[in-house]
Image (cartoon, rainbow, N blue to C red; front, side):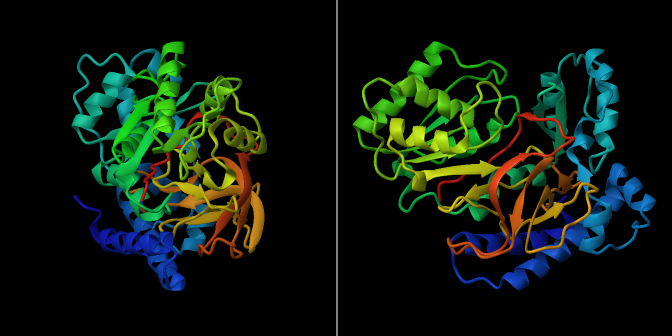
Length: 408
C-alpha cells in the first residue's frame, strides 16, 4: 500500500525540491509547512505501525498528535536502534529471532520463509521476496546495522536524488563516463550509488566486483585507471565517484606516472564511509585530486548521507552541505535537545518523512555546524558548514553513507 495520507505531501515536497535544486524561485515558508505537516503525519503513522516507536511515544505521553518541536525533543532515535539485536543471534544463525527483532522496527511483521537460511546474504534475499529490503552498514567494531525498507521507502532512497541533488553540470548526461571506485553489491553503502550513477551514463566501470568486504586487487586497480586514461584520451567528461580513501588511492597510483588530465567539466564526487585506507585531510585530498586528475576544487563535490537516511547532502562551490526541502535538519546538545539558533554546532539530527517503513526521526551520530544563514551559492534553507565528524559516544562508521547521486 502507498503511504496513505502522507503520499500527496511527499509529492509536493519533491516538486519543491526540484525547484530548489535548480535555483528557481521557491516559497520556502510554504515548503516548510508542507514538510512539517508530513512529519506530523509520519508520527501518527509510526505510532500506529511501529512497535519500537509506539512504546517510546507512549512513554513520553505523545501517543496522540505531536508537534514537530515535541518530536525533536522527545522522539528522536539514534542509529543504534538498527543494531540493538543480540550478536549471539547472528553467531547462532538464529534468523527467526533476527526477523522478530526486525519486525519491531518495521511497519509490519515480516513473513518470509526462513527454512534453510544460514547466512545474512540468504536472509536478505528471503526478506526481499517478502518486500522487506535491508540496507546494511558497519561501524569500526564490525557490528552490522540493518535498516528495513518497504518498496516505497526503497524507491525514495533510489530516486529522490533526481529531485534534490543540484545538477553536477549542464548538458547531456549520456555524454559522460563514470568510474565508481567501490563494489557493486551486498547492500552496503556504495551499492545504491553504483547502481544509480552507473545507469545514468553511457559508459561506466566499477573498481571491484560483488565482494563488498574485500579491497580491490592490483588487476582491479589497473583496469580502473585504464578506464580513466581512455576517457582522458578521448576527451570525454568523467564522473569519478568513491569513498575519500579510494579516491586517494587512485591519486597515489597515478602519482609519478604520465600526467592525466580529465576533460573539462569532469567531476570528482566523494562520499560514503572511510573503510579501508584512510584518506588525507580534506584540503590535502582536494589538492591531490587537482594535481593527479586535473579536476579543480570547483568540480570536486562531497556527499553526506547514512544508511538510515533516504537523501544525500552535497557540497556547493563554497563547501557547504545543503539540506533539501524534503528533510528537516536539527542540531542537538549533549542531552539530544534541540539548539535553537541561526548557527550552532552539535550533534546532527534529521527528520525524514520519506522513511515510511521504519522510524525516520534519526540521530545518525555525526557532529557539525548547522547554519540557517544564507549561502553565497544562492540555495535556500539550512546548510552544514565545515567538516562533519563523529559525535562523542557514537561508534566510528566503517561503510555507511548511502549517496544516491544523479547527473542532472
